[in-house]
Length: 156
Image (cartoon, rainbow, N blue to C red; front, top):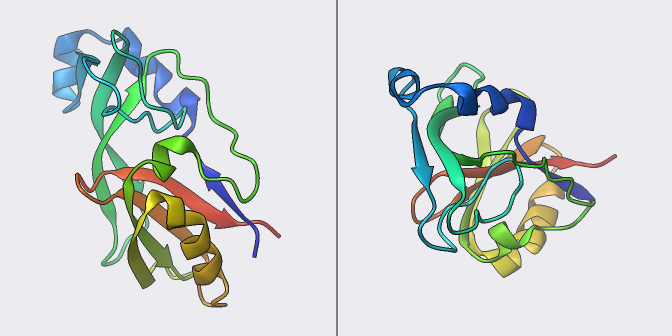
């Protein structure tokens, strides 16, 4: 079953870079300058930020649907990030280079399958999971820090 990994939309985060540091703190976010690479994966560009780049660290509701699996976690977004457009059946390097927790949900947004796999095995794990009819979509998380990396969807 073909799949596509989806970044978060750039337009949702661009206004954050116009806020003062105090305004960011009021939103439980902060501005940072990247000091090492890899280590600051942008959820919009689906790339590691470069040393010296400015990012915003914020809490993002990645599973907004009500119920037991509603969830949010910290994410990074690069200033002036260009929204990634991964091709079908492609896993970006920022995901392939990390240990990934893959979580798969049904139409009712209940988790029905999960696995932890090396990044190089993510494509196979997604393909295997999407072979199950009850799975509607998935979320990929960096397994060690636990933060949301991207969503993954079936391609008709």
